[in-house]
Length: 117
Image 1 (cartoon, helix red, strand yellow):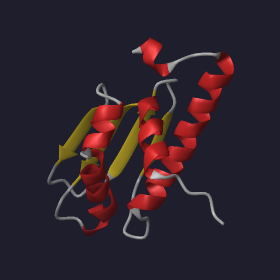
Image 2 (cartoon, rainbow, N blue to C red):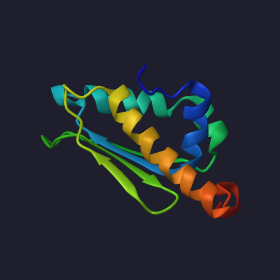
Image 3 (cartoon, one colour):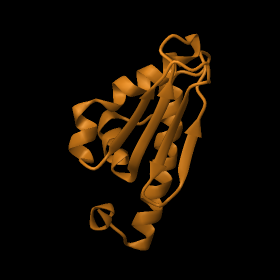
Image 4 (cartoon, rainbow, N blue to C red):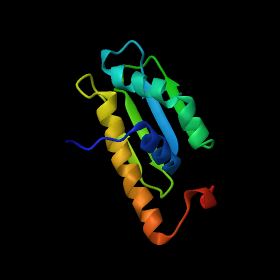
């Protein structure tokens, strides 16, 4: 069975995300995944788990490709240039993998993400 993050684990892992930056042109056909990520990031469970989660959303009319950046508490970034072939669930799966890595590092070092906020 493939690895899957349930809703509870997904919510927990977003404690390790500081900022989500999303930039897209709503009239560009490549923005489907970026728009879906915007919708998902507005879920109340993420704000409840991480009240300091900052969403930086830029909607523009330039013909540039969309991008999504996730900034983690340990200073690492996960940058994605989504396209129509890349689904939001796959992008978020990779973000969950990165956040679980940060979670494991914090746990092994005896750190608590709540202490750094």
